[in-house]
Amino acid sequence: DSGVTQTPKHLITATGQRVTLRCSPRSGDLSVYWYQQSLDQGLQFLIHYYNGEERAKGNILERFSAQQFPDLHSELNLSSLELGDSALYFCASSRGRKDTQYFGPGTRLTVL
Amino acid sequence: EDKVVQSPLSLVVHEGDTVTLNCSYEVTNFRSLLWYKQEKKAPTFLFMLTSSGIEKKSGRLSSILDKKELFSILNITATQTGDSAVYLCAVEVVIGGGSEKLVFGKGTKLTVNP
Image 1: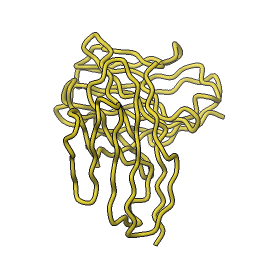
Image 2: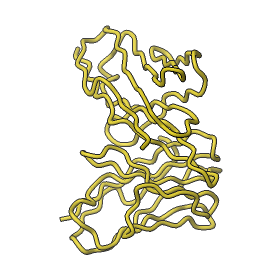
Image 3: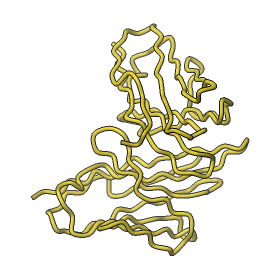
Image 4: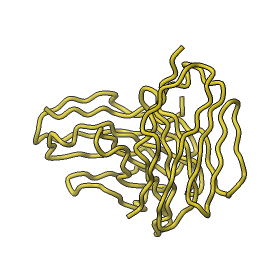
């Protein structure tokens, strides 16, 4: 158990819908990262937040957005969902920029 | 474009065998290389390597980095069925603005048969 929690574990929804994935980092970790893992693309970096501020964006679609709250938990919002958005979404946390990232258990999103 | 390539993509061995997993990379601004083990869901951290030629060991697992030739290897000796997993190599790349990202390879799927 890495200490990073993610909810929900599974999510099944329809195309065009909007969902919110939640991540609570390890106690004391200020950085939160979001990743998407699909069968064909592997693990892809989406976005990084540090102490409430967005620090970097990776391969994140405009339909996706995220935020980190004052208590350091983070939410990833996915809207206008498409079949291709079906994937495992991981969040990872670290103490700071130079520290190891520890991964949560992931949320499996299925878009029907 | 930052790229991490792992080989082989899959490997089937018998318990007790020794395996070597390979990871090569081409990235713009290297900070570190990490190995993760992914069984059912979340990747779990194994090693972080930042300096060339210094072997890191944890039990039957060891890893080394060559920053000149841009590759790393992960060795597993006396394999056990519990070692069956996907092993992911990731390179931490500095992307500016006080941030970094992990670029992952596609992974090596290791199957250890009894």
